[in-house]
Image 1 (cartoon, rainbow, N blue to C red):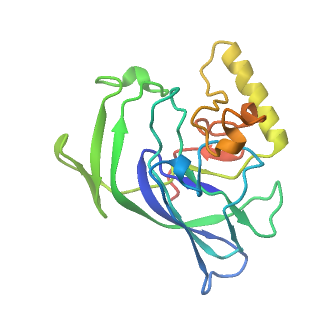
Image 2 (image 1 turned 120 degrees about the vertical axis):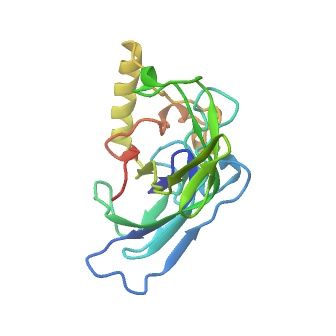
Length: 230
């Protein structure tokens, strides 16, 4: 599973539920390191079943994800999005299991950006210049910006992306569906090895680079759902 906060950066505390109460749960911390996702061994921006786990958690243990900014850099549009923390192996689970988690808390780590991208379902209703960005200072209670004086937005942070890794059959289904959609004239994010992380599995030299699915669309396994957790 991986947690990522959309355009802002947060610390996520997630508890994996068991049938018993969470008592004296051990805390596992996935630290953030490096300047970019590519420099961080706990970060990925593509999904594939062969991506190795970076930690193990027992049912009932608490996992802290030190997440990153969503990931914007030079290269093909969206090629660095999203910077996800993980994945974490949940001990004694198997493919097809449903994993229940409780998001205990979400804490901002300083700053973030909102951008008018022009590629959402509401793009034709946006007012303003496509590509314009607003920089925010994220406090414990409010987000404020010098670009929009006297505005305080309550901090109600949540993970924009939370997912398990899809299996081989799911990957095949997604690729067939998404290639067909693009061929029919629709918009989609097909595999893109440039800026892909992990580079050894999904990068330009990998023999399976065209099997690594992007994190833009939500799918049956979860992903970029952008919904509040409570």
